[in-house]
Image (cartoon, rainbow, N blue to C red; front, side, top):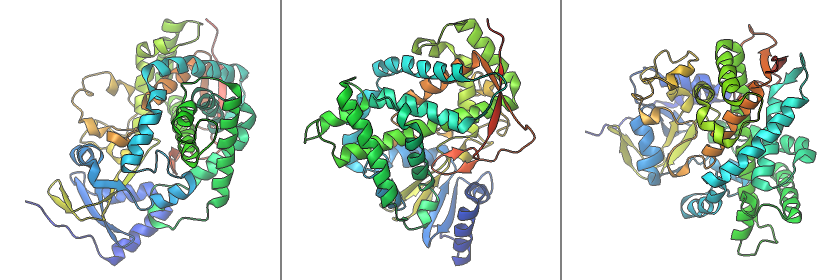
Length: 437
């Protein structure tokens, strides 16, 4: 039997608006209500809305019935800034664009990227000094941006690093996935023009270099009907989307993992043991990733507790039923990795940092869609394999030489939800050099 559940009254809708704007994570936690509720109805900006909390409902929206949903109407705000790239395109346009760039993320390409990732990480690692204090978000952002610049754009981005990061930070702050459901798009033309200029510069650098013909930017240029020597809006939009997602997600994950390791030094010691036994003093390579089992488990646990992609919003295009609940056309559907990854129905002791949960039989019994840090279905993150490899290799490379310690372990570090779930700005860590092997 299908149950028609009508959203709460106007006062509840106003509460939702205020709560989202003041504290989005607290809003989601309050909305979640009883642990046994699989679907929670509410009202958002006068529209029926539903929070999905069960893997079966998540699978339906993202995978088996994905064609009955589009990205939420708040996406118009994003489109005005990023254009019609992979993040914002729908239907056939999205499929075409994804097919164009997919070869840049095939296994053979990832193997080539591994050496570049480690080279940049080792260079950053070797610039650090004992007892130096570093602002880890800035360090991680500069590193991952340099890696994306060389692997996917074939360009040395070092000279543009500060300018690019400032432009991308403006974009990220404008793209909060919940606030964008509520507020009209701001005037984003200046930010859009600034980002477009950065992308054009990167593309021109690539064209002049005559570099890798199989990287992402070469694939985009080759797919243009206008030919590879011009820069179309579509190429610019796709390149901008990948640049934003390709550096921000893993930079955020890397910082959270360093923070968690500082708070749980026993896990850091186990990474060091694994890295020392496998690598000794040599640099890692993509071939080492499968053997860095505990390092990946730590990254998996970091992505569970602090998923950079923390909420997904969709809009139903037709009346349908989920879990016995009628979802009217036009309804907003929210899915939160932040909530699902902490649900005690699917995780024992869910608030604990426990990398071993990924190494024992607890993983085998977990529902598939209870863990989806990179999304799922046709709109899952195209760079998931890239991100996993980069995260493991970067953690291993830095662990060979450094332990990072928080300046104040007693200070709470609260997540800051923007387009990704970031640490607060200004988190500083002290570098402690390990004895050489």
